[in-house]
Image (cartoon, rainbow, N blue to C red):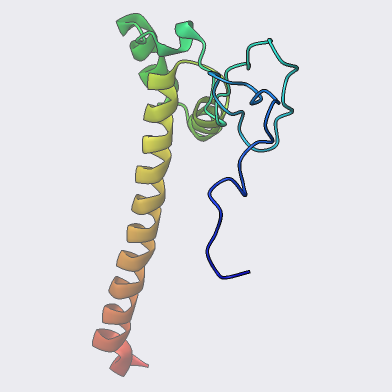
Length: 128
């Protein structure tokens, strides 16, 4: 070989049709359908939403949710159920945001108690 590539070296053999001419190439991992059949759409792993899940939550439902959040221990369980279970998207996002804020508040509370405890021990440590 003289180092020059022939442009026809990688083309289809003469006289054979190009497979799926005019159709998109299926993503890797999908089988190629027989000639003449359309390629099914591929969603690339995107979640499929139920249209009812995208509707807003009503005011009455929010009042009920806020009343349920006043019950100790039940509120934490319900937040996890609403955040990671099925349901309306706005309620799921609200529950996830509540869990994040709750985790931040717990961390800040422990830090405050640690600082306060260290301050009190250093201030009144001479009494022992």
